[in-house]
Image 1 (cartoon, helix red, strand yellow):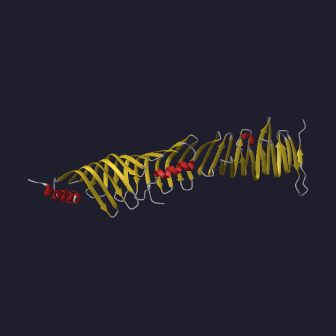
Image 2 (image 1 turned 90 degrees about the horizontal axis):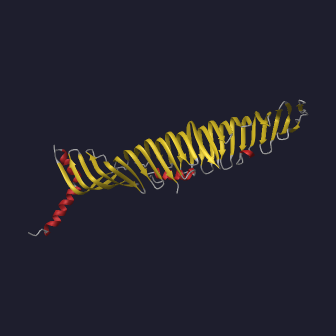
Image 3 (image 1 turned 90 degrees about the vertical axis):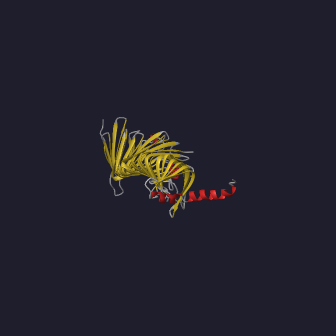
Amino acid sequence: MRLAPLIPLLLLGIGVAIVELLSLRAITQGRSSASLLLDNTLVNISNANGKINFYAEQFLVDDTGSTADQARGRVTTADRELRFNAAIVTQPADQTGVNLQGNVEIWHGEQYLQTNRAHIEQDGSIAGDVVKIVGPEATAQAQSFRVDSTGAINLQGNVRTKIQRR
Amino acid sequence: MTKQWYLVLALTLLSSALALAEEYEISSHSMHSKDDITEFRGNVQVSGSDVQVHADVLSVNANTSLYNLAGTPAVMVLIRNAVTVTISAAVIDYDAHSSAVTLSGNSMIQRGALEVNAEQLEYHAKADRIIARDAVKLREADMEAAGNIATIRALRGTVNLALFIKGTPATFRAVRAGKTFAATANSIEYSRRKRLVELRGAAAANYDGEILKGEAIIYDLEQGSFAATPGSSGQRVTAVITLP
């Protein structure tokens, strides 16, 4: 049997599955043990505050929300763009941004922060615990951090900043 | 300025603004950075090859290169031209462009062996000059003075230290070759290099028991000689000299 005529239909089906992934979660939330697992998935989350999109090697939707493994992506707002990667990305059921865990790196231009746990809102604000921020001429470490949607940075707990002049 | 992720920008500008060390570290309990202002709070310590700071709060304006220290007291140690300058006050403002430090509230500057206390102090590092206001007291190994306002020029070395102090009255005391010179006047000018003390306005001096009063007195501490000028209203110069 020749499959060629079916390929466009097959691709369309996969595309619909990806685009509708988040709405699938709403469907699964009504079930007691429902789950959906997809490989090599592109996920888009957007609302009026901004947009989060990421690519994940695996993406799981179940009753508690969605989970992505080995994800990398970006957060886009009106005035900045953050890139991130993490071992695990989860989106809670209330869809308030995403949680990043495990070897998290969040980049903004030449500077980036490293942490094991962070939460990113769609307005671009980020919060998390033990953090190291690295830039061209400065590094900073702290027990917790918050970068709000305006770009203001708050570091708390045993803050260590090192500055090198060129 | 576009709202950005300010930390590195602010700290980079901060490093340029401070212009103090090739590398330095800041430790604190917290840090807040927004636009051009970066503020460190709680047991703030800065260490570098030519600066040490301890304060409760360090606030830096990267745009104006001004930074502000507050503490109980805030302490800043600068090493300039191989001279250690220790600065202490409730509030310290540092202008990195002009290298000027302004202190207020129980202020103290220790420059080598010289210590100056006042309510308000300015230290101009480039000129190596101290300006003191309100309840001024200064002392060095063989000299001390007090008054309301004073200017001290170190001229890049304690040998050339020059002092001008005014008060109601200003007081001055120095020990030279085991002899004590004590004076009061409305203004007192002292040059360590020239070993000259110039007293002006209601001047009175006691040099190892020799008492001198006049409108103006110039004392040569090296030679032990003096010249006195009476007041303009026909007053006399009074001298009490103890003969050997």
